[in-house]
Image 1 (tube, helix red, strand yellow):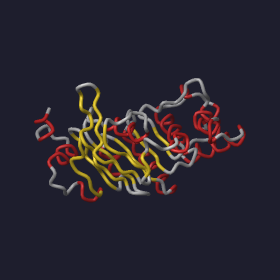
Image 2 (image 1 turned 180 degrees about the horizontal axis):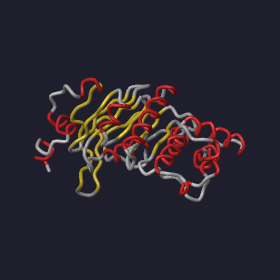
Image 3 (image 1 turned 180 degrees about the vertical axis):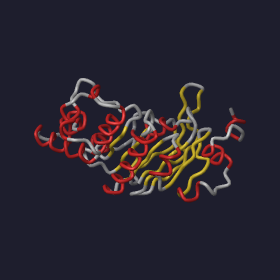
Length: 248
């Protein structure tokens, strides 16, 4: 569904992406791993068109994302942001229904609220949460609201940016299970970036290792532990010694 070919992106002298080649099959969950500052978030922003690559091509179902009609293109995506990115001034239900209250996906207010409450239920939150404000919620509840918002418009593709950051291990496990269930239930194509290996093992069908601006290794999750690739082995086991440390 998503194909990247020789994607380059630099910010001044900082060459972040140096020729990324990656294919994300329809209906599968791809997780990109790699150290901080390796360009994982920049890669997602390039796919969404929020950052323009310097060269290379990014295609969605064979269509160049740079030439696609923006509203129709973005309507196909949902995203769970790293920090939740909820609007403090809006009640929870309006956060969840944000895309349904404006633009090409606009629904009547009452219908949008009903959809929001249903999506909140899907992520394990009760209807009374709908009228609270984000500041009244715990970190784990905020993350669930963010997930409900990501799926509110029934997107074909969902992006997850560090979905368990800031959560305790138990809540992280709950979020991972929800992500896996929802992606499977919706038949969506998913793409996540994370440092959390428990998330990788819970939600990935395929894994890609991004390092030094290129994909060093990619393959099914079942092959990740067995690969001889030194970058993958160092990263997944958290070893101080190895090629990544040598580069730094």
